Structure formats: structure tokens, C-alpha cells
Image 1 (tube, one colour):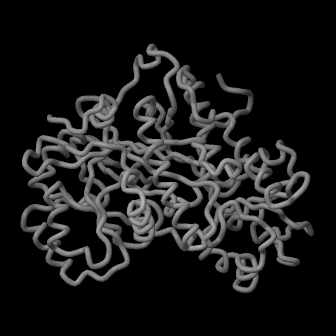
Image 2: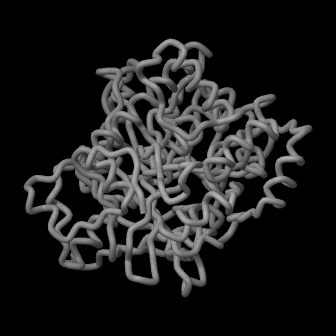
Length: 461
């Protein structure tokens, strides 16, 4: 049931000018029991690698991160009707997802949407219940303030872009209300509030701010706040703590993240980070990429962007076509490049003098659920984690899924990329441990996830 006046739309944009984000909640994504345990192991190894890298490079770390972990496999070159190496796979991790988009708000609304449909999302024991995530983030701010020697309640802020260009404005207001409910003074900072910098702190409305949750990339601060003030905000506010410090923006790179993982694995070979095979720098040669192609294809980010918007998937049709037909029926969407033998050869030749700061990765095929005989649903899992400074651990706090329809009659989708521009819709993610065996009734899993939960690392079809 809905509470009076409750708005469960997912929105983006300035207040009063919001666009509704497409949401698909008819088929929630389930990440439970053994699958959840395996996913947490992937996340913990990646986060340990991230923390090691930050310590060794004398860099601050974020206190709120996102992990994109998908259930994937690759094609067996000797049998294109077999998928092998099935495992939860980190696609983008702590370096790339240094401050996830309003995790508390989306997780809560998706949970409530399921309840409003008469569905029981509480058949699982969550790591952090969706109704408590905002409170947990508020408690994080209070705890960090006290660890820095602060007393009483901190004065908090959400720091972002100007109206009406600011994204997620409704979500920010809900976050501020959560901070205020926890006993903090809390303000939203945009250029319209004419903030200033003095005495080593960021000020707004004539008041010094103790701790900030920022929702703007560093490169955009001088654009919106002006060169002088932008420089001061980034470089002259050591006594205002940012939950996601400015320096972490230097880590938002697939190549840096891969180097961090390799450094970790050199010291901890027993705790590898599950991810696609990744080529860097002079490793990107026609011969090495041809090896990736023999397992179905390769992936490259061709232009700078956040998330998957600049990512292109190259399919070696000779190897990948049977698996693509089996999993998706149709994968002809945006940035899906299907190559015949001549096309593969041409693309490989273009890599002879490759000299770009980007990674080339093994194409791994993501799981998809069966919606009908003519439609499949590709999905991902975005899992948000929060740093527990008291115990030097990371808490898994919330999540959402993004899903893309695939099939011969789909007009916006047919993609393995789960960003909105590729036709994705936001979906509920139910994660944790099932309370009873009866909880599995009516739950649907894709073939890759099902095999992983059964302890298998390959499937034939």
C-alpha cells in the first residue's frame, strides 16, 4: 500500500523540472544465498585492493562507493555452444564508481514500489534494510565528524551543480531531510547559495560546514562556481571533510583500477579480483586481442565518459553467435559491433600502433532472464558499500539493478550495456539471504546465475 502523498517515481533533474527515470519492477533481480556470498567475496577483494592502492599512493579514499558486479561467462572456442568460466565479475569497481548516485533513495523507492504491487521483498534478510540506508549514511557523517575530533552534531551539506541543471535534486532533498532527522543542520550548496571559503572551511549562509557529500565531479566545479572560487573549494578547505574527497577523481580510470588490482594480486595471489581479462598499454596488440576474440570478442571504451556510455562491445560472430542467440535472441543495440571474419581482421590490424590510455577487455557475456519466448532481460547489479571506520571494513548497504530488454520485437534495447541511453530501466535488486526455502517460490534466475548457484562453472546449450 502507498502512504498518503508518497511519490515513488524515480526522478532526475532540477526541482519542478524532473524527468521520470524509466523503471521496470515486474521482474526484480534476485541476488541471494550462495550467489550473494560469492558476490560479497568479489567485492571485498576489490575493496581491499583499492584500500592498499590508496595507502601506498598516499591518497584519501572515498567512504561511499559503488560496485558493478555482473554474472558472466565467455564462449568456449572449441565449442561455441558452451559457456565457460562462469562467475560473478566486477565490471566497474571502487576506483571508477567513487560516489554512487543517491543510493539510499533509489533502493528505498524500489523496495516500496514492490510493496505497493503486493510483492513481499522481505522474504530475504538484507545486509542493510532499504528503509534504513539513509539513516546509515547519516550515521556515517556523524561518526566521521567525531573521529576527526568534532563534538556534538556536525553541520552537513550536499554539494552539487546549480539549479536547474543539477541532477537528482529530489533525491538530494530527501538526503538532507535524513541528515536533519538525525539531528544535523544540513544544507544544499549550489552557486545560488553563494558559498565561500574561509578559515580552511567551506561556508554557506554565513555558517562553516563540517562535512560534505558531494554530487559533482571535480572538473565541473570551476565551470559552475568560477575559476577562483572553484580552486578555493577544491584546494583550500582542509577542515571541511568530504565523504568523497576531491583526490579520488584522479582514480576514476579503468587503467588505474586494473593496475591497483594487479598490485594487490602480486601480494595476495590467493585473493584475486574477479574481473574480465584486461590488456593495458603495450599489451594491446593484434595478437593479444585476437586471443580475446577467440573466446567471443573484446570490449573497449573508445571515448571518455562515465559508466558504459563510451563502451563498445566487439563480437566475433563466428564464435559468439550461438551464445548471443541463446541468451538474448537479439543483441544488435547501441555500441554492439558484430564482426565477421573480415571485420575482425580489419579491427585487429587497426591495433598495430595502438597508443591510447584505455583498457581492452575480454568480452564476457552477461546473464539474461527469460521473459517470454520472444523476449529476454539483460540485467546488472549496482551494489553500494559504506566504509566502517571503526572496524576498517566495508558494509554492503543497498543496491539496484538496471535491466535491458532484448528480442526481435524490442525497439529500444537489445544491448548488453545497462545504461539508460542503451535502453536500460532501473529495477529492484533484492539481495541477502532467503529467510525460508519457500521464499524461492516464483523467483526467476537466468541460466548463468542459476549455474553459479548450483556450483557449476560452465553450461551447454
